[in-house]
Structures are given as structure tokens and as C-alpha cells.
Image (cartoon, rainbow, N blue to C red; front, side, top):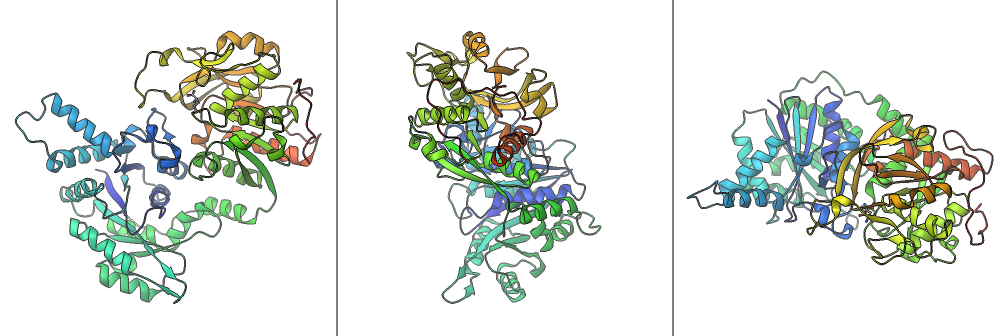
Length: 561
Ligand code: GLN
């Protein structure tokens, strides 16, 4: 029988509960346990797929095609847990299941109520995330204790613990110890109040993880212990990290979290958790000073959560290459179509991420043209790949007005068109082309050299695709198709062999990058950016390619320094 850890949060949102839950997962894995991870989100949307990045940040996609909360990205970056659609439940998803069952007559004669029907559905959701291989399931409850919305989830986890033997369930509550600079004091009252709220519901936390800017003294821990009814050694400090989010797991181990979890869950504690490789990585991050600069040309650049996995994947590749990757966030709509170099000059690579909506599209196309003509490394993801095809069709093939049908229904040249599977769909939720798909790589291509494989699997989230009708012309003009879906024939990757590094992918490789295992395309892109920064003639495999790109009709802008 699996053991359960529930992670709740109090005082304020954005405490880093997702990172803490992911770190707990990592700590347990490194103690030889097999973990599963799950998140409950109290909002009514059935999944975050229909929410704007302004509301929610990035939508993270699992292999099985679920559109989920971005905390699941932390779970995958920190652990080997297999995440599926059972790893993320919202209030909307729980209620829609219960309401559908009610309509089928499953509760015939009953008044369907929050307790027990909704809470039972939440308990079933907890069990749905466990497979026979799992030793510990970590379930994070989104939101802040005290919110109306999260009450059914908290009630359900209280009931859940009641059904299980002692030592099988652990409640971790995360709070904030605010530091008042004027009086030079740390305050425990908000923590006391949020634990009080939790106790009103009937949950007694076993461990408190206290987020703090300043060190938490032993006296402070004792005071929190006394007022919150938690043993002093179970009041764990989580200090703000100095230089990287990847410090969190080792900081928590230093604060004794691994030993306390083992004690409370009756798991053997056989000595300190081995983090040698992780610590070596942290040391590399800390001591890296050389920088390269990548322009991320997107629509939501002011929000750091909107492209979370991309920033992390760039980071991972930078750690591997011992370079700090500085990201110049360029708002696509600010890029001048005539002089894209104004905002881009000096960068060592251009990345255009995925996206929806027309805003900024012409700026993205212009930025790609600039990267192509100036031989600056380019990496396009999903919409970024589609924009690269549009750019090539317009500027190299001379197909004026080439566009995507998503934004230009009457374009004379729909080089990006709606996928067959998407035609006739009238609803919006959960019905894009989603999740892991196989892609066959063209031998010898940049893609094949980067992956070192003939066939790969990557995750998708889109409705539109490269229009096969233009493939022969685009290829004849130099835009190579280097990855294709083996059965459906969909073009998944295109690249310019005549450019130092120019690749667009229809999928989202950022979801599969990990700090100790950076994604091969991100690694190749960062290496190409390093080579670009060093100057011509320093290119390293696999980014090497023949000269001669940039047959564009427009005048070249000066090559950036
Ligand atoms: N809007 C584009 C499509 O639906 C691209 C999607 C994306 O970038 N995730 O095909």
C-alpha cells in the first residue's frame, strides 16, 4: 500500500509549494522510493487549457495529452514520476465527473452533495494516481488554506487520512514567516493563523515548512511549535534560494526534512540522502560567469510563468555548457517589421515560442527573417516553427501573403493549415492534437545529429500544421523537412542546412528537459549560440553546416557583434 504526503499552503499564494512538493519527491526518490505526484487545483475550469497565460502561466502537457498546471513541470523536472491525466484534478473536473454520473442515474434516489459525493470523487482521484509500483504519492492542494474554493479538497484529504493506518499519511503545511525590516523581526502570527484554519477543518499538520527570507532561529521554531502543535524538529526552514531554484531539495535536506518524513511515515532512515551529483551541478551553476544572450520573441514576455519550461530548458542547456543563459525578453509586437534588428542586435540566438492569437505574429516572422539572414542561431517551437515556414514561403519562395489559416482565412498561400483531425470541432477544451507522438528523423539532418536517434517521441499541443502541398517547393528552396510523423506524414521538424543553426519543431521539447538531462535541441541551440558569440569558424558539431543561407530578397542588416 502506498503512503501519502499531502502538501497544503497557507498565508499567501506563490510560496513555492509546487517546488517544495517536487523537492520532497526528489528527496524520496533518492532514498530509493518510487514516487507519484499529483496536484489539485480549486478553480472551476476543467483544465487550464482554456485559460490565458495571464491567468495561469504556462499550460503543461503530459505524455498522455492532458493539459495541466505548470507545477507538473516542476514534478517532472525534479522526479521520474510518470505524470498522466490523473496527476491533475480541478474542481471543474471533479464536479463534471459527478454531474455526468448523476445524469446517468448512478445516484438514483440520492441528493447529490459535496459531502459525501464530491469528497468521494476527490478520494477516488487520489487513488487514480497510484499504480502498484508506487511507494509514496505526493498530492499538492493548490490555493491557500482559508479559501472557500479549496474546502472540499481539504475535507476530502482529512477523510482520506481517517481511512488509513497511522504512519501512512503525512500532512505538510507550507507557510510564510514575514520579515519586518523596520523592526528587524520575523513574525509567526500568520503561520499560527493558517495552522489554526487547517485545524478547524480537522487537519493537524505533521510538518511545517516555513518560507523565510532570514534564518529561522531555534527560538522561533520552538515558538511556532508551541502555538501550532507541531514538534519543534518538524518546523522546517525553507530559506529563499541564493542563486537557483534547484537549491531547494538540498536546502530542505540540510534542514532535516528527509529524516522527519522517514520518521513520520515509518520509512527506514539509513543516513543522509546522496546528492553528490546534484551538488556538483549546483556548484557549476554558482561558479559559471560567462554569459550568452538569447532573444525570446513572444507574446507574454512580461510574465515569467508564461514560458516557464522554456526558460528552464535554456537554463539546463546553459548549466551543461557552463554558460549563463541570459534571456532578452522581446515583445513580438514591438519588433519592427522593417528593422527587426533594433531590438535584436547583439543576441546570440533567437527563440520563438509557441502561442495562439494574431498579436505579434508579424514581429515573430520579422525576427525569424533577421535570424536567418544574419546567420544567428534560430529555434522555433510550435507557432515559432509555423512562423518560420511563413517567413520562408514569403521571403525566399516569394509567395506574397503566405500565412497560417489560423489568422488569415483568405490567404492565397495557406502554408500552415488546419489539421484534418481538427476540422468540424466546435468546442475548445482538450481537443487539440495533444500529447506524445512519434517522429521519424531524416538521417544526417541536424535533428538526427542532435538527438542521436532515428525516431523520437515529443509532446504536442496545436491545431494547425505545415501544409504538405507546399513541401516540395519549400524543400527545393532549401527548407528541409527533417522530421515526419511515421503514419500520419505530418511535418514535425524543418531546418535550414545552409544556416549555422536554424530549426523549427511542431512539438514542445521544453517539457522534457531536466537539469541533469538537458534536452538535445536546447543543448544544440545553446552551443550554436556560444559558437556564434565566439565568431565565425568556431562552429562545433552537430551544429556545423555548409555556408550560403539567406537568399532573402531584403537587404541584410549588419551581423551583430
Ligand atoms: N496556434 C498554433 C496552433 O494551434 C500553435 C500552437 C502552439 O504554439 N502551441 O497550431
